[in-house]
Image 1 (cartoon, rainbow, N blue to C red):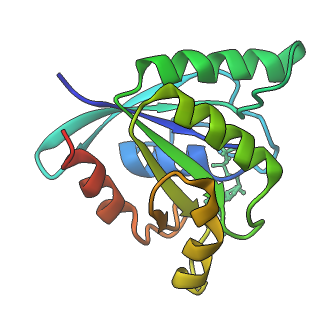
Image 2: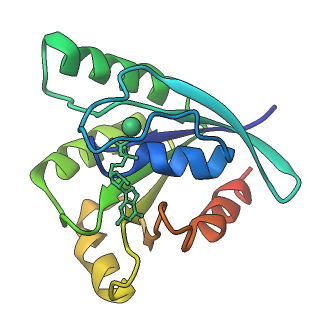
Length: 163
Ligand code: GDP
Ligand code: MG
């Protein structure tokens, strides 16, 4: 069985960009418009010799009750239920937000293994960025750049090594 890795996080943090890199396709819709990816989106990738399934989700808004945002949240909830591991993506340029903390609480309650990726970390001070996101209590933050590829293979190998 391929492990299922589920990408979760606020809109616009770079989930679809990471999905594309992990699946080496341009299938996931990447855009500047927050919340464009509304449905779950599946792809297959390979790290070394290990295949994995990766799921892209739309923006995650745990408190929304109706409308598109709520539907996106339902999609994310379903995806979490399918996850062997959660890749929690945050935006290193924007910094830590209250919404990130809400998502972190929800993800921790799921009991699934969480890997915290601080994206958009190209050119940043990695140690400082990692320190900022420590308080999410989702394990060691890994600074990556989905757009440039920095740290992505290392993080992927780390995740796959747990299966
Ligand atoms: P999603 O809403 O979480 O799926 O985010 P997207 O993948 O659609 O990306 C949102 C925006 O962030 C786009 O303009 C991407 O080009 C940009 N982006 C994604 N990854 C990176 C990165 O590593 N560095 C920078 N600087 N921008 C990124
Ligand atoms: Mg997206």
